[in-house]
Length: 176
Ligand SMILES: *[C@@H]1O[C@H](CO)[C@@H](O)[C@H](O)[C@H]1NC(C)=O
Image 1 (cartoon, rainbow, N blue to C red):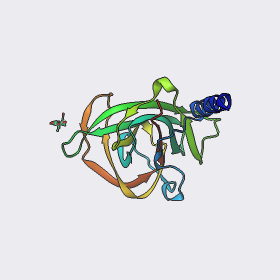
Image 2 (cartoon, rainbow, N blue to C red; image 1 turned 90 degrees about the vertical axis):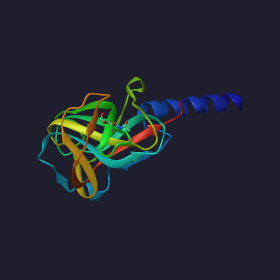
Image 3 (cartoon, rainbow, N blue to C red; image 1 turned 90 degrees about the horizontal axis):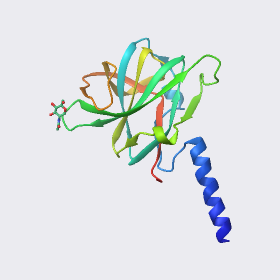
Image 4 (spheres, rainbow, N blue to C red; image 1 turned 180 degrees about the vertical axis):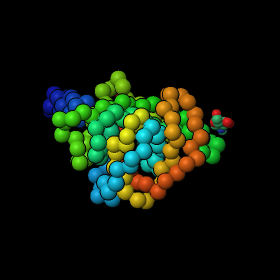
């Protein structure tokens, strides 16, 4: 019995390492038809969504719904206590090239353990694309944006907003 419990445990941990889908909830929206209507034509924007992670742990996977190839940085931002100011805590670079089966579906990309961002409960999900937009959106909610390529640790004032609800989601893990 004890041996069985031991091996079962190992298997569960291995599966989590492979899929990256954590035990501390998923935050945001990536699969609803409400967020897949439009693709923006803007370039070089960093966004902060109203999606918050209510888990203190690491981001073990990202989910999103893409409609274009390119490179995107999926990010965690932290409100610094002054209206409109947020600090970039970390980011994961994801490149989607032609020939991959990502397109027009809810894609979940696991983050290797040594690259996972440490987030705190109530941090915000954001992203940045230096080229054209990749992630779809629908109307509703709000995003704040700035034309910038922020460095990790930098604090920026996000004052522009749009009524857009993007297809992006963070899977969190706090089992370590
Ligand atoms: C937030 O960051 C801005 C810009 O660096 C700074 O002026 C402000 O004092 C910070 N707010 C707090 C509460 O630390």
